[in-house]
Image (cartoon, rainbow, N blue to C red; front, side, top):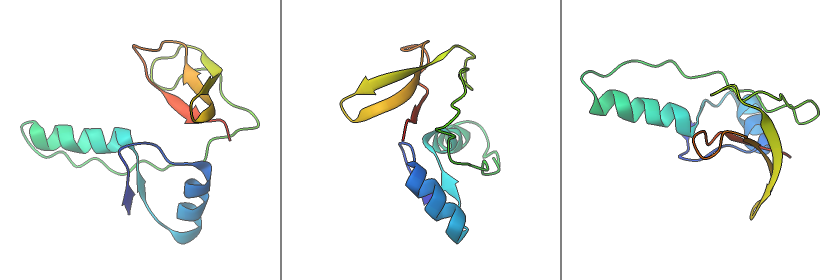
Length: 94
């Protein structure tokens, strides 16, 4: 199992899938912290993670439903939600 407080790269997805490693993303980690800091520990099953499809990126944000836009940042190209800053969903463009 690998846990991050950020996001995984496409290469990390491939390596984890090839070796049967479970990946916990920032969202899953937040849910676990919320469960511990809340009333009772809620078992949240790990989310099956697949590598993003860079050839046919979806145009709808999976969190809020707004449009996904191609953007450039200090770390390079990425896809981000048009609802930023209210929605901070991003995914790698590579």
